[in-house]
Amino acid sequence: MRWLRLRALMYWVVVVALVLALWIQHERAKVREAHLRSALRTARNHANGVILAELDKPVNMPFDTGTTLAGLVSHVKRSTGWVATDTWYTKQVFRREYGPLQNGIPFYVDPVALAEVGVTMQTPITIASRGVPLKNSLRSVLGEVGLGYHVKDGLLFITTKDDAEEASQADPMSDDMVP
Image (spheres, rainbow, N blue to C red):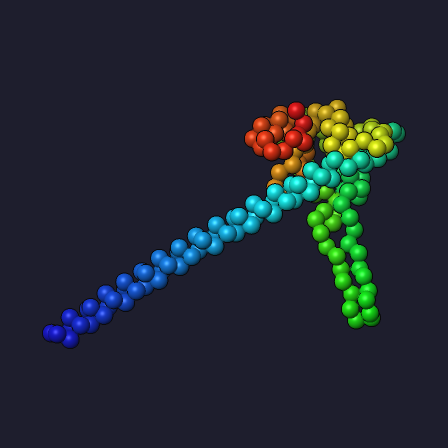
């Protein structure tokens, strides 16, 4: 009889130990998740800052004879950021440099927004500018076809003017939204 009580007590001790271990793991997971969310938020804010800095730089737009929206996006991607360089120190050792915007500003063109305003990626666009900041060029050329842009989560979103306005009101830190 005493042996059965001792056995039942041991089972309860094991159950309590397992519950405590699970609770501790859950608390540790919450702390890890908070750290990861903080790191992700920091990375997104850094990426947004890099994109906003690129938007302040002048980019030539030599499309006085016209191009398409896809051609404009491609030109901006080629004209911004930087290309990775390989530095060979010896035959065996080389260093490849990577960084933000290695392949230009990352775009997301909202297909639903394009359909709303009746624009496709093949819509002709005409713009000719030299030495004008990219944000001003984009604002004017996208505004002509009823589009706008905003920067969020490390991407430059091309969307409708209304959506861009809503995004600018939702994120007062970014002043490069189409008003």
